[in-house]
Structure formats: C-alpha cells, structure tokens
Length: 150
Image (cartoon, rainbow, N blue to C red; front, side, top):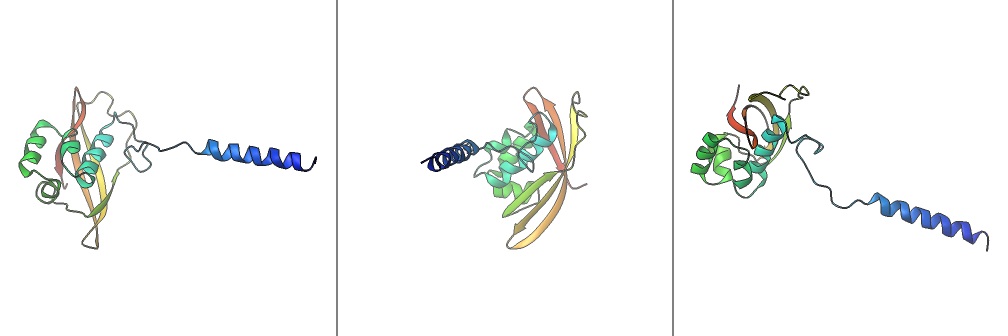
C-alpha cells in the first residue's frame, strides 16, 4: 500500500502540471511571433496589410489607413480590387514581415517609413516582394498614408 501512495501523488502532480500548462486561446498580434508593440509604425503597417489580405472586407484595413488612402481604397470597394489595383500585389496567401526596427526611434516622430517583406502564393506560384510604407501619426495612432515600390 505504501508503494501505491507515492504513485497516486506522482499522477496527481503530473495531472496538475498538464492542466496548468493549458492557458487557453492566445490573442494574436502583429509580427512574426505576435509580440509587436501596437504603438509603433511597424505594427500599423503589418496590421493594415493583414486586414487587406485576410479579411472579407476593407473595414479592418480602413482603421489603419490615412483619410487620403481610405478614400482611394473605398472607391475600389473590395479587398481583391485594392490588392490588384492600388497595391499591385495580388496574393492568395501571404506572410508579411517588417524590417527590423530601431527601438524608440519613432517615439516623438510625426511621420515614419517602414519596409515590409511579402512572401506568398498566387495561383500556385511563389511571389516575393518588398514595399516601402509611409505612415503618419494621428491622434488615433499610426496610419498608412502611402505604399511604394522604392
């Protein structure tokens, strides 16, 4: 009976360990590991493009767009048209990575420029691209103002 008692204790401890390891669903953020700070321009740029390529409508992307870019995007009505005509980057599936940022460099800035790397597929072909995104700071946070090929 004494041999059985430590075995029960071991099973109980192991069960508690397994239960404590399960935290539930994690919220996802921007960046490779979902850990990008939401007060930096890189976050706004990645979120803007993520909404364009992953959502069913433009509402999420419009939250991260400047008024000038919002008007242009609304005239194309759907995500696929914005991908094709505004960005000239249609993808079926895409992964977006920002270039490494210098911490604190945009703390007091009114404008920022971010480079984003795109790697995805279109009709089964792998496509890689680079875009330079110009952002402006508003009272609501960073907003994408222009996207260029530079």
